[in-house]
Figure 1 (cartoon, one colour):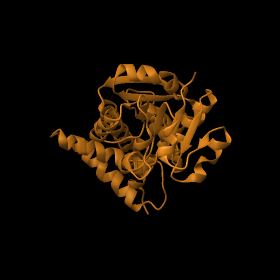
Figure 2 (tube, rainbow, N blue to C red):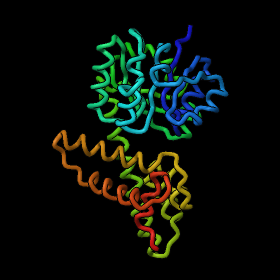
Figure 3 (cartoon, rainbow, N blue to C red):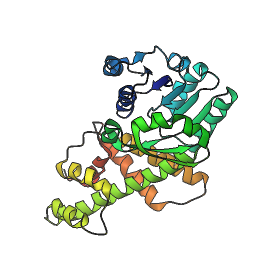
Length: 289
């Protein structure tokens, strides 16, 4: 018999992830802070819970994917939080991007309740979530991962067990810092090219045919050339991830000059943007007028 699933968080990533679990034949109970965002998932066959605790109460496996550490703390430890509903022997998989320290604290809280825990942040963007082609970065026990691999396989194409609890979050923060720097570097290069009166497309075609090629630019370069920054991965969340990476670097007593510059640049664009753009909108930092 397939395990019953609780799913908490139906944002840009969570909604298609939950839909893919339903398509794979799992019974899914969902909760989202903004109830209306659950409507199409419920229409597809999910059961709507009134609280995170209710979403967790009948589940064998609970997935959470919410925006930031305070949101994770709210849905787990808050009033009617999921931790109070988790039953002994169940598994909590958190696919939010948070600090490694919070992941370890969550693991300890689960262990006290006889619950297994994985930190399993994802990458792949909304298109990967919709296609069921996400990549999961997992921290925790191999036996726990083995229990939930069929569910992860319904949402992702690859998953990596990277170490103990907190390892998944560490790798995710490091990887997102690389992505942020790659996109910012391209934005700076694009500013040079455009200021010199040349078409940005010329830069892209040469870069993507050279050692400078970056797969992230297959997705982000067209967005930056068009200036249409509809969010696939919002800049506010990339800024949050950069800040978490820099906090972790501070804990490890590491100086990251490029990371510091990225935090400043993304932060400046975040403060001056009146919309909720994709992180490719870092290119706005160099726009004139």
